[in-house]
Image (cartoon, rainbow, N blue to C red; front, side, top):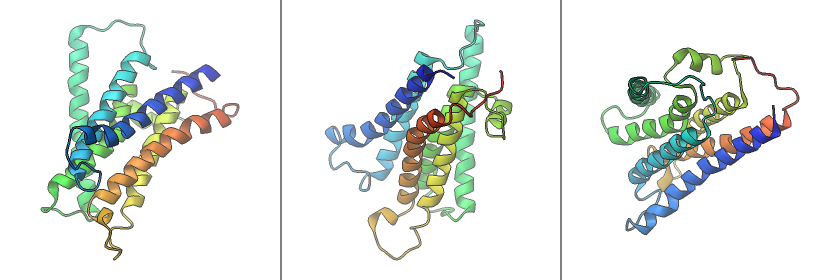
Length: 219
């Protein structure tokens, strides 16, 4: 494990954090009365687009899992379409999970689905960029001792922290504080965002501090 790889990972994570910050401030120059709380659904869409775009650009530039084999155009198109299907499946899957855990079934359907889209953006999109539409690779990365690189280690940490942030964000909802951010699903989306950013910050430093103990399997 080279220090240069960890630095590159840190720079990529800072770019992802910057994309979240941009989604908060840039729309205010073009949209009147824009704010995370007042126009929450709009911000969910913008944040999802910004983070997805930055992930795609970084993957195309850095190519952490670049293959020496050349791929045909038809293979690339098929792979892209599979990724789109996986992303949509992830959105619907998270939507069902939220409903099973108490989200309104009929009311606030759009709000719940956009939360699912945001969580898929923080978790599924990086998996698709790094591992592709390969369920076996996903299961390997999130199993014990299945990591093969610092990129997968970082992916694991960031994904788990996004899930934890979403889960923790649900705790204030039933409390009678009567705050505007307690309205569904604002606290969960904020929790998911804080969890995602926390994972992006923590993972490079955790990998650096434990670089001598970490060992990865060969691909």
